[in-house]
Length: 76
Image (cartoon, rainbow, N blue to C red; front, side, top):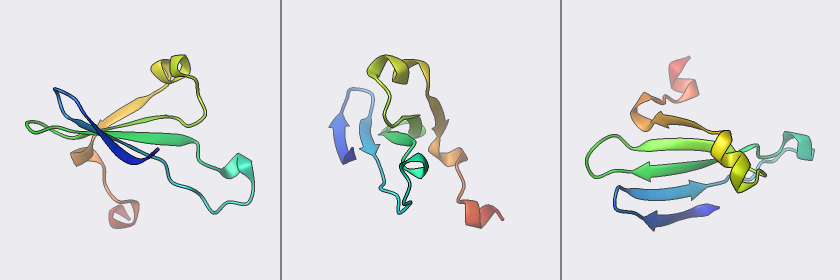
């Protein structure tokens, strides 16, 4: 997932995966972020397990409106 975008009737979806600099695979990428940008309404980010099957992703996800997400350093 490289930040590519898919246009839908309801919004534009972007999928992101970021490589980690961790040496051990156990500390690698655990989640992918799927961001849907809406023309009217709040943009939304959904986290899904990185190495999961489609069925697993449909049952294990977390979504949040982007306006509710804050930068960790800024919140400290």
